[in-house]
Length: 345
Image (cartoon, rainbow, N blue to C red; front, side, top):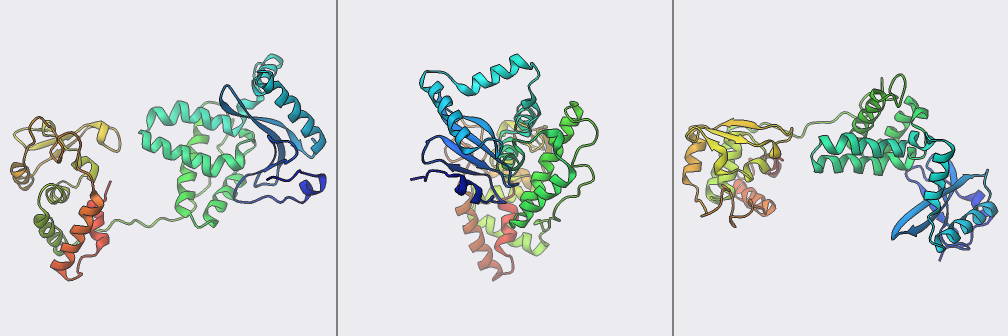
């Protein structure tokens, strides 16, 4: 059970450089002291209205002391008990006093607008979800309550250093790409006047490519192992080698996508990384493999065991392929090399 906050205990609380803290007040459930990684503190009350969780900021600490925060929290909770939403009331009062609310300049508001207007309409759902995850994990806890115009190049560098220092340099790079696009978008829309705070900032960490081109001997071993596995996974691996396409693209291949007497495979934009249709010439070897594959009645899928969905269970298929490669090559081809073919997506 949370302890009642006191003036002394509040003074002694320290920030966590890696995340935002919310310290509950045991005397008044719903009241929290919010401590940002930067050390900035504020009061907030959490409640539910219309079945949804809400949060109302009560003011900054120490400008708003513990006693005042409790009074404001009680007033807010009494409003909730009477069927009103104090957060909506506060917003309405702001709009009435100033039609152009200063809240629109908060980083949290900018990110919400950026996700809604730019990210989700342009990116595939999985990519959009990843961008949103990066913002929630690395950006909002640090900058969420700050004004967009107050973010400086130094803030950007410190944010990226903090992520890198956690031992996640790749996450720092991905976050940098996301905030760079965010601020460029803000400049384009005149939310920021002048340069983006990301201008002149370099990529936080150098990334080493994990891709490696297999030697002819290694390809031969993978091919032989795939031949032993047979349909569907063995044949799929052989088409991966012959076409150079991604695993999920080949796995979802359809007979109706093959044209020109079997010489051309057109991958629709819904399945390509860039969202554009992609034409893949099929060699004689690829056509020979396709000609040997069984066709399930009523199904357009090339690699399917159910007729309704593409094959799955790649992990088990990879393990089997690894074992066969090891048997054939006595360890000449590594498991990771097989992975570059089977797990590429």
